[in-house]
Image (tube, rainbow, N blue to C red):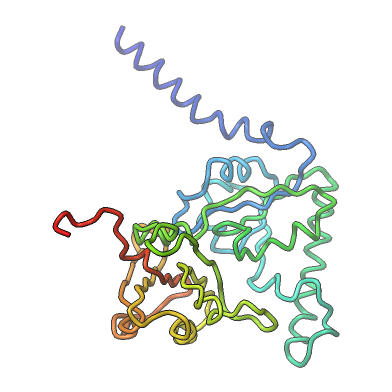
Length: 288
C-alpha cells in the first residue's frame, strides 16, 4: 500500500512540475506577440516564474550570447536571435545628426537595427511569439526599453525583473530607504552629455545614492561624490551582485574607500552605494 501511495505521489509531483510549461502559452495575453522580459541580475535562479513561463512559451528568443548560455535550460531548442551590445545606441537619431566616428558607427548599427526591426515584425505578423531578454529590470537603465516605443503598435508587454539595484543592497544587508536623517534614495549613472542632474548636484541633497557604473571609471564617481558628501559618509562597493559564488561587498567611508579597494580590479558588474544607511542601526545601544 505504501509503495502505491509513494508511486502516486511521485506521479503527481511530475505532473505539477510540468504544468507551468504546458500552460504558459495559454496564460499569455491573447493580443500580445512581443515581450520584453526582465530576467534579473546574477545567477539564473533570480528570474521570476513569470519570466520563465514567457521564455518557455515564446517561439523566438532575442538575447545577448551570454544570456543564451545562462538560460539555456529554459530556452531549449527554440530559435534564438543573438544581438551585439550597443544595438540601442543613438536610437531615434539619424547618423546625420551625429559627427565623426560616432556618425559612421551609428550608420552601421542603424542598418543592423532596421534589419532587426523588420525581422521582428515579420515574425509577429506570422503569429510567432517573440521574447526579448534583458538583464536586471528592463525599466531601470535597461538597454532594450526602446523596443516599447518602436513596436508600440504591437502592444508589447513587459515582464519586470529584479534589478541589480535590489540585488546589491540585499548583499549589503541594509535598506537604502531606512536611515536617520533621510528617507530617499537616488538612482543615477554616469553624467551623460546634456543632462542637468549631474552626480555632484544630486550629492548635495544628502540622500542615499545608488550608482550604476556601466563601465564608467571609479575615480570619476568618487570625485563627484566628494563634491557633495562629507568625508566620513559610508560607502559600499558591491561586486557581481546576485551571483552566489562571486558576490562581494567592500565598505568604508568616502575618505578611506580608495585605500580599501587598492589592488582590486573592478569588473563591469559593480555598483557604488553611498549614505548613512550603510551603517545605520534602528535599535539603540541599551548603554546609551
